[in-house]
Length: 225
Image 1 (cartoon, rainbow, N blue to C red):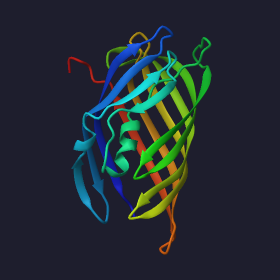
Image 2 (cartoon, rainbow, N blue to C red):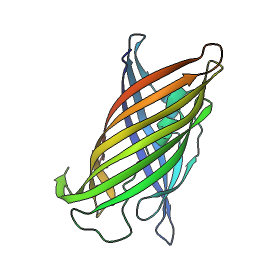
Image 3 (cartoon, rainbow, N blue to C red):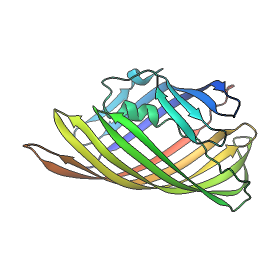
Image 4 (cartoon, one colour):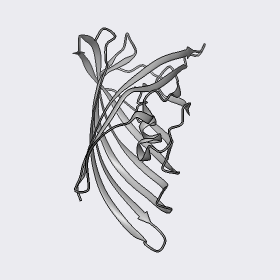
């Protein structure tokens, strides 16, 4: 069975506080969120009203690594798009402590817990970045940064009173354009190839393999646009 899922979201980021060490508290929320699903079972467009305006706080160190995440407004009855929808909007550029030059590489690792459908999924990401060159994007002077990496997911959810165990791994590839003066990502394009297995226990036990291909584009919306 093949399913196509297209999401279109506008994310708002507000700076709440910057401490003496340069760590920044940001409030993340969605101004708009639309999801289009096409499959043999359904063909539907959904406006995700329950996600609009729901706030998440993240604390980001001065080099970009996320120190803490806190869901301020809990989303209920939004299915798999609930916790995952709130967390997936908080991708931040991360830089190494030492000085770098064009051609240099650096790595980062992130472990996150996503609450979804009455359960928890542990999401781990290992990334390698390469500083490529200076580039011009959307009238901004940017640094072009290529990245590759791997992801893994493990945990369980609840569906129809049954426990659903999830395991999976994926490969990530992308390019971001970072305005160093503003400290903002101007454009980020990525793709993920993910292989997952869902196992249902109980009287109707079964194993469901899934191959998921994801393409994502994030663009900075200027204040005057």
